[in-house]
Length: 252
Length: 252
DNA sequence: AGTATGATTTAGGCACACCTAAAACTGCAA
DNA sequence: TTGCAGTTTTAGGTGTGCCTAAATCATACT
Image (cartoon, rainbow over all chains, first blue to last red; front, side):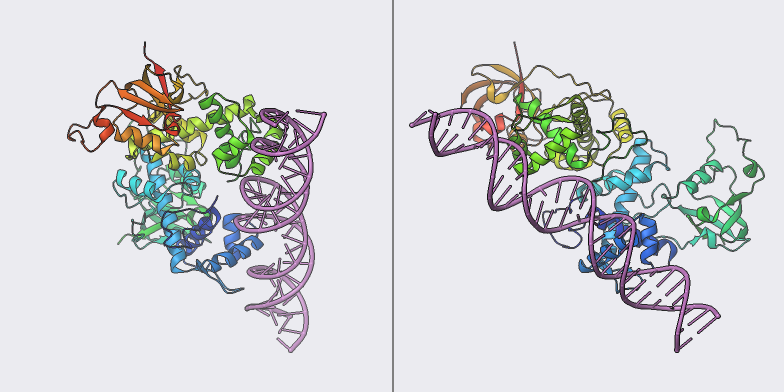
């Protein structure tokens, strides 16, 4: 897609961002935010589904644009401008997802792909009006916090579920909408965002847990399904990949 | 934008359409539909804001894709597949515009640009759900008919306003949403879609007319503005360009 | 018929974003 | 300390879509 053309070109670099640049910024931010680790070129390549050389070239370009800090062979970090861009994209993405679920009847597992395309096509005006219409939501359907119009983002203190020690009582706060397996796991075990669970055991990243708030939001008409063995036993096993896609807060 | 990737690749050429191809198809269709004339390469270039050679190259590509009929130096016509693609884009565009006006508080003069970008980003699923939510509207806020899910399009028999002979009584049916001057002319003179007018005189495409249904949909609180001279006299002059952007039906 | 005028196509380039293959660098370990 | 394995960058190439400049075609007019 061509660069975003705006009436008043205030932030130069951010206005000049192409679809690709927007995706890179968002992904760098996501990796840093989610894992709290330093972002390597190859992690970025893996996440974006492109080759390492492509990342290398793009990092040079984005460094020239003043969006990333990057000395050769060193890890990658966003500059303040880059973080601005990333947060703007996150805001778009999460508002769009909220809208798709609330008003267009999408399931929470369907919205990611659609939002991924739409976020590059909408104007600032659009985002602001959507925000008003939705009543300035603070989190999206996956529990992910939505940056405000000033791009400020406040979120509760959370841990990656895969890093929670055994025997801890926690509340499910967020799921990564880009990991379908995580979404479907929560769906099939009827564990909604906000549910409390106890971590029973951990096994090299994989997690076994028990729901405390029973049944979640079982729809009134639907009888409890008996066809799920682990749910029947009250104990759920999540693969590392899946547990890595969830964030929880500690319950005192 | 990259080609539209679909789960089941049924119509090959249509699924492989890039944003540019979609725009070309839509524009060719628009020129043919609106004017009823044969579409030349340079008219296409002018409308799309690209150079003639670009059109030439793209026509070869779209001919290879089976979307247009084009022998060198001859006018351009869509194939049935090309028409399908164009109608699908028109459907998207008009449904999105309807939604922006109805639910996001956009003015009818703001929606074109936004829809122009969104129409390339949304999925078929999105369009269908939007259609349902809006209650299967048959026309958009500019009076333009919206193709159904089967891409069938039925519209009333209309004339370009700039071709209406003098002394004829007509009803305003459609405005071209891509012509801001036409939209603002109707706004300032308070002539809504559906209004009846008499064509007073024509002057090489320019048109002078008198409203018959007075006042249009004046908002109750707003007193009739006195600051418009021609409207006060009950007689409105539209430049050719503007009159060419409107379609009317004959009132018996 | 002959030519000028405008429409159209070919030729040659540029920017973006991606790729594979090969070279260069880093840092850990024998 | 030297070597090796993995990471990262450079080199060279592809596809899309656009551009300007130059050649070609079609036609309308003298």
